[in-house]
Image (cartoon, rainbow, N blue to C red; front, side, top):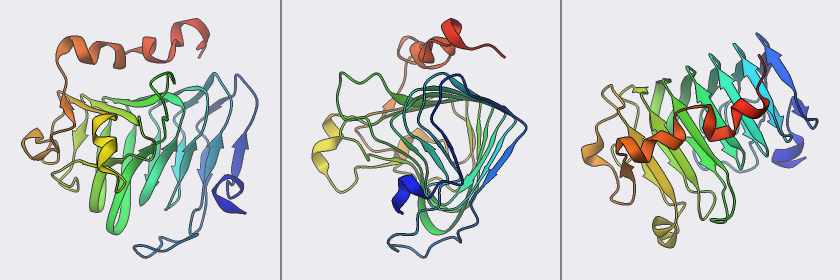
Amino acid sequence: MGTFGSATFAVNSMFFVAKNITFKNTAPVPRPGALGKQGVALRISADSAAFVGCNFLGAQDTLYDHLGRHYYRDCYIEGSVDFIFGNALSLYEGCHVHAIARNYGALTAQSRQSLLEDTGFSFVSCRVTGSGALYLGRAWGTFSRVVFAYTYMDNIIIPRGWYNWGDPTREMTVFYGQYKCTGPGANYAGRVQWSRELTDDEAKPFISLDFIDGFEWLRL
């Protein structure tokens, strides 16, 4: 079945909109290092999709943010390992990201493979809570790109913040940023040297609908 085929619900058509819907995969939380335990609640593989007030419930690989431009507002996303992952261009606004990891895990695994790919995840005015010890992200892609802005982070965040997927060369090509985040897990002092504390100008492209060209297609 694999990760792609494990989704409880899959979207393959443009202009999909979901409001106040719960997407759930009941696969249990895997033990650390377990293989083949992916359980996707939703896979979105199409452009111009929006999710408002939705719940995404799972453990490993909950939300497969696969391809396309997507908007998430006031959503609840729960998981343990890499539970927001893929190579979409997505804005998460006012969302609650909740970890249920038993030990270690990661919130994101963004898979951008080239500077030419206009993809990445931006979390704006979100909240990160839960259990375990979590990285903000792991560099699934060589040019992985993730930003957290105006986001509250509980003390579950590993001080280093980010993991290079076991490949030090990715430290030179990823784009991982933080901007005006708060909470005990948001202290930038312990972050890896290859992440960024963004300036106002650096953060600006990531913190509005412009990031996903939303003013062109988003109608809610």
